[in-house]
Length: 437
Ligand code: XUL
Ligand code: CO
Image (cartoon, rainbow, N blue to C red):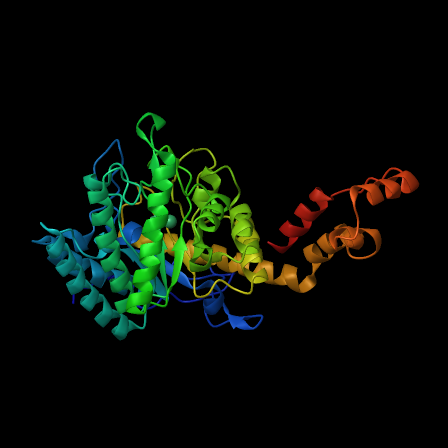
């Protein structure tokens, strides 16, 4: 087997916060205990096949900039074999326990549907062998239902039932491939499930189609005994102007409306949350308080740009807020933190992939450490508990328990008069947060 990262001869070491070596972890120390679990168990890092091994650096203004050695091959299948080799070599040297893929990342589309399925089967066998050799596991699989021109008007939401059928057949094989590889989740990201103009779109019908598609996927998983968690990944726009899976709240209400609530959790991506006009921690919280935070696409957007830049996380404060949500729901497993992120177009070299992931892993490790300590010390929890304490007993409790009416409440106000003003102490809390970060 070729070696694609000869500059990295050993697994990336942990050297601690004093180290100045960009090829060492300063905070991510996989076996270090944080509370009851190791860092590795808390964080469940995953490498995204599409960005890390398939991204070319191409953008709407220019040609590919990354000349990856694993794409220099005679045929698409030979290229796929080199790529899977590169993927496992990279994850092993980095020390990432998981990876994620789209069906068409792993294996090229063939001349016919049957040929595409054969390609996928061959590459699944190869990936399985490499999983066994390295111990690296599949966090989730998914299907690419957005790249090919046939999906220009959507997949499940396509106005043409023929395209719906093609997408369903493709997903059938992607779920089977995920099962074969022992994937612990399967993700649905509705790449082009949305619309550009209502002049040609029946929104109600398209959402019903999407619900039918998900029900069929649930039935198929049951049929073949796939026990991984199904996840939907919300995103508000891009590529379509308006995507149906806009944000966590929209997806949850869709799942409730179409009797799918029990079968799905959410995969929340930082940059998708910010595109929707939310913070990352907002969408994580919406998912989590509904018992639906299943996994995370760990990246960050650029605050100056209004699109999905998919950058590696570099802000420990944002990661602390994210990890607070994760720790409070007692972990993200069987989900994980998947780096749905890519180095910038000018970061030409393979070594840049290591710098990017190491930095992202360290940033989340800092977030984990800070969040754990904040919870241990109870600094935010105590404040919040105190802030709502008027509902914990007495009249407030009686309201929440359903013992009061508007009439009885009015009597209370007539007797008690105006409430006192109580500061929310935002600036104090921000200062406390940053003292932990
Ligand atoms: C696109 C995106 C996808 C999904 C998987 O914005 O995030 O890569 O994570 O299809
Ligand atoms: Co994503």
